[in-house]
Length: 166
Image (cartoon, rainbow, N blue to C red):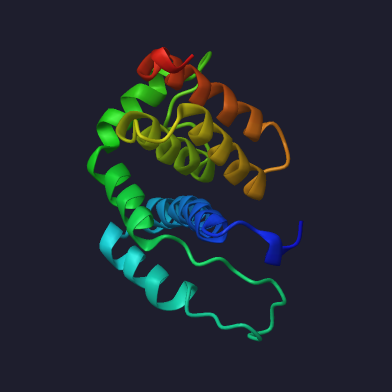
């Protein structure tokens, strides 16, 4: 099947899904930036909207970037910011051994916080989809054991907050 053979509406749905995936990746980047620079959500989001996604085709990179779903990106970043204490408590109870939220590497913490927010705050998105999406995000940043950690922690959280889905 070629692109031209795609059933009507499928391209829109795929595009919307890619935009959500891009929003998750961007949210993790924004949360990382906020954590290391101690900047607030609004200035970081504004910079993301104005500069990061104003790159045009032919700007020196052959990769065609998918623009994130801006509403979803804002929801994720502000949601993590507003519910940080709650999310960290949930995360902390799901970490094994002597691991604490504070001990996690900054980028890994951003991935887990965003994933936890979706598991807790977006019951309309299936838990397995959330886990899979953040596993993909973690693979974009890490090549070691971190993706396995993301998978395990988010799976434990999902079984607690969305046990009926399993």
